[in-house]
Image (cartoon, rainbow, N blue to C red; front, side, top):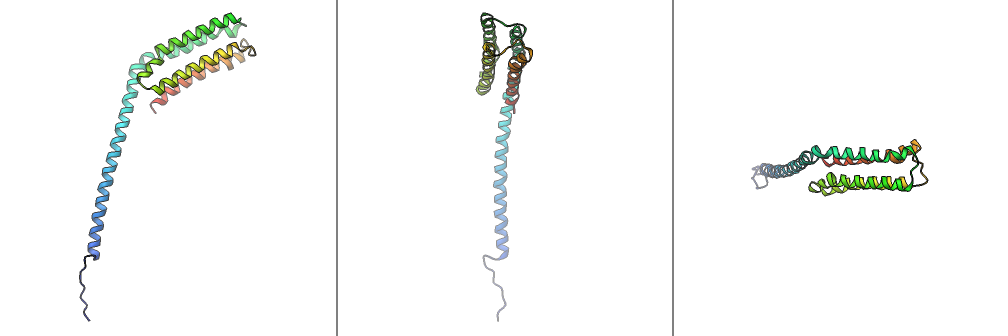
Length: 176
């Protein structure tokens, strides 16, 4: 009986070498894949950071005070509603002041966001438009007694505050 072992191509030693080569190739491919993905994410993050820095420098640092001034102005315009019952003519005058203030905000603040991001522009514009619409509807609703302080707070002051918070939230989320 012949006890010699003949080596074949598929010996355990050759299988081990082939397996090591396959593992090395997959490791190399996986490393290249991770590098490409991380480079792409870094580039996206850099673009996003640059875009936000531009927004902050060009628009917010010089114009954010206009947003807050707008809301203070709206509060001032609406204040006479809490003091006495106004006629429709007086309410119409307040409404015209609101419209003018809204137009001024759009021209001096909101329109600047078209250069940065159209969605952000639309979100800010929608918030300010909804504010004016709600205030106008509440002002001309005969069923609401706005010179009663709790009603004024819930139908006017609260609406103004929520609108301002919403716009600030959109500005904050823009970088997220």
